[in-house]
Length: 219
Image (cartoon, rainbow, N blue to C red; front, side):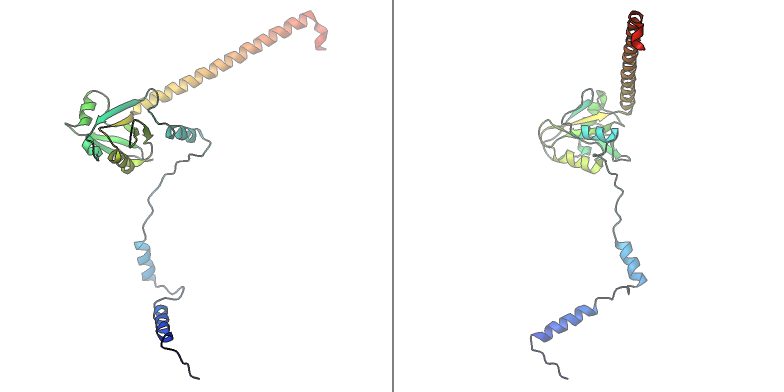
């Protein structure tokens, strides 16, 4: 039996044989090659997902805060002067640190900077959390909760204009707000119970009066 091939077919056959010779059959990979591939594979970083679509109170608060385009009432909004060019936190005099959940805090305030000027006036201090940052243009603010240091630095870098604003929150303020909210909720519940008690007392009184006038009605 003889196989004849044209001059065009032979190079294709040679190429197919060459490619097949480099493909190892399934299940024949050596232990060393598997270990090398495993070592070379990138390890996915820990990511904390924000459940924005949940029905919990925390999810509701996250959605409400993300929808804000200005500093919430009663919050501390601080304006930094800056050159009209790409800026970093260090240019402003701020060093940030990132905590669990990607919250960003002021870790250090560098001397003789815009940040140190604002620190002297009592507007910022070490340990403040950055919860909002200026948008790229104009006076709108964007949420900075849970965005991490890298994204915050990018927001600072792309900001256009001669100023950039931050909304800062202090741990003491958080506790104070939480206590105030709990106090308001307790007062609201107490008012509700007081109204229900007054209504019940009124209904009992009306029933007594109606019974005294027509006792056979209740039989």
